[in-house]
Length: 392
Image 1 (tube, rainbow, N blue to C red):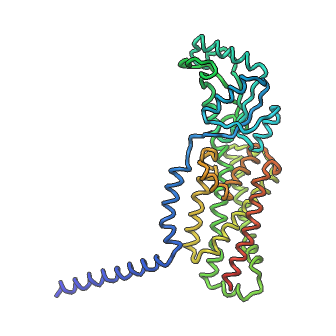
Image 2: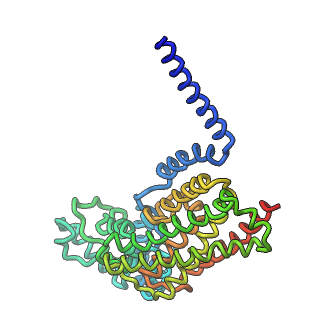
């Protein structure tokens, strides 16, 4: 008898588990958003890490200041471009003009060729012929100089890799084991090459993206789950007024987080804030609004808070990996760069680093500032229209 009772208990236990299992599978099959995330999250992660993430920096946009005006200068440019580390996209007439371009972010490095380039090349060739032991023992002057946006240590490292590149094509001779120094490298904005100088401003973009999108992504869904959405429907509140009212409290939250990040970066990690605080907060306020609007768009699509969290996480991955926060934007393939340009975090990372590290003004960052403004306004209108349709 005891065996029969035990058998019935076990069978009943398994039947109840099976019933719950069938119920969960049916519910999951009806939840298209969650089911899609099951497939898309590992797929996107694999594609991002497999194709988009690349620490081997190539094809950096670079400029040149050629005071030599000689065929040797053009030959040197072709030799440097053959390494695929840089692509010369612009010529400048003066060093001041080149420095302004670096500040604006138009180029990441500028090669400066002096009027006595031919003499420097002859000195370099003589040092090669004498078999210089290494660059530190070479008595020849550098052939040219690089001015580099040193705020990103990976980019500076890529340019420094060219310092002792052999100029075999120019002299038609094999390089010695330790060729003499070819380029001098001057890193701007971060001469000590500290990683935290580049990381701290970018981290502000990631923190604000994570919190701002998450807060508003769950706001309307929470109202629906708590049964408050019916009260909102019966009130004379316009959808646009509802969206603005949802955003305003979190704007202050975002500004508080900005103060915390900037204060800790400055006092604890000694990250210089070269730009004006008014400019910093103006750009940050614009990004906060864009992130909140992105969260509202998610909130009008998600049916549950779980779906809202899943969609937020789905957006966080490319925001972290493709925005330039962790890996140089220039090192990504073209397809990844197109996706990155659609993310508010990409534009804010460029903007906040430009202001904080390079002392760039809003006029120097017109494209990214305009993009964030257009995204915020357009997203607000779309979110209000989508919510209005849900009321109908």
